[in-house]
Length: 263
Image 1 (cartoon, one colour):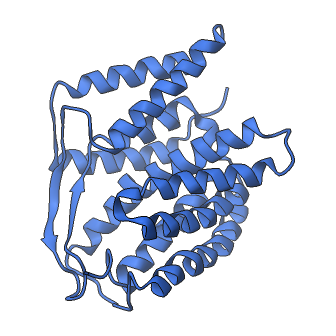
Image 2 (cartoon, rainbow, N blue to C red):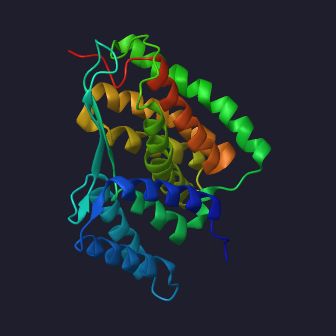
């Protein structure tokens, strides 16, 4: 049996506690929890293979619904009211979400193989290799497209943004897109030539498509960033992917227009 990833669960629990401090839950949220428990049972059982596939299908539907905030019973607290961090930026607001972290809990409890365990040295090497690649591809691309500009800053809400982005955004997204999707596709394509490369590219494209609501530029930029995160995951495991993703987000937040230039 694969040991549970207690470190990641502890960080996610800390983030969930932070969200609970500012948000609220209704009894209808129990329906989502029950469906996730059912999906987890279906995936972990070994007797009925079709049941495992159906469990994964239910989870994918639930992950989409939770990420898009479609499900009832979650009253996510807004902790940053709309404001411009720089005069030329679009207004930014931030919520501490209670629904999206359930995706991360499910993945870490039901699919602990998503961690992609590597030594600390390999994780550090992978991060040092992948973070500059992600910065050049994503932030460099954003500068070329004219969607961000140079704008060093550290707003009053920066520390709250930092905790939210690390614990409730980056960890969950990397567990889903790199651990579950890229890792799962790598397992499916393990006997195919260039299977790991194909898994990395497909997961990166899906990560880009998740940003479709922000426009085609962000689909392209997120896909390029996903390549860097995928490289980090492939060689350094989930920890390296999280560190690379968070490092890029932090550089974007602190040094460039955030979230993007207005008009």
